[in-house]
Image (cartoon, rainbow, N blue to C red; front, side, top):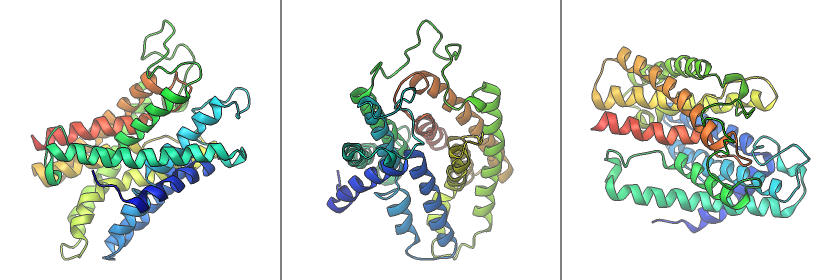
Length: 328
């Protein structure tokens, strides 16, 4: 397992900064960082890939570091009683800088380090079965898996009413919300989750497929562009969370658009389907991602008092399935 000492140190700062500005805001910056870097890739800028690796998926705004650190810090703050009555550790929006307690940011930093180490471990582990990215079930999104892993540790350590990873269901079905619990209430109906997934999925599957067909092959960054074009919708979905933070009823779609883009690109470049087939299947993958994210929330997140990220759970599971189906 490869650990970069500089990145390890900076991961502490990334987790602390994610706590200071709030986990969701840190993730919004992840979207900006990727979109900026990808735009530079389209322009053939040589350093653009390194920029993406450091800023979007590294110690600066990597979701497994900045977002996960911020979410863990919120769980800790709730555990210590720093939050006002009625606010629990699932609050990933509020900037924790409003609670001037040094221990909050130290915890955010420690969990930022944990996210970095965990991701490196998963990269090493899955590399045993999938050298150089080739593999079936053991090819997955290690960043999303690490986000979930860090959240699981935070729940076990900082859970207040319950440290259980599921529920508590209090006599209700795990998939029922009759007990008044919610994640994103305005999209929690199965039909709405599916519809948002289908429409956003179709949109950004098309964007990914169109770009693959129109980027000149002599672009020096062509290989990196094709390998990461599926993330465009994910980045735009991340940026759209600005409006959710402002209180507008914006859909949470990054788990939908990333699976849609990935399915479309895999079908187009690995399986060799027609572009329109890739787009349609991408839309269906987005629909699946929407339903999967809502189911993940109802089982692991909505009833708990710390945040176990539903989109990250859906991305990890969905990505694994897509790689399995398209490379078998």
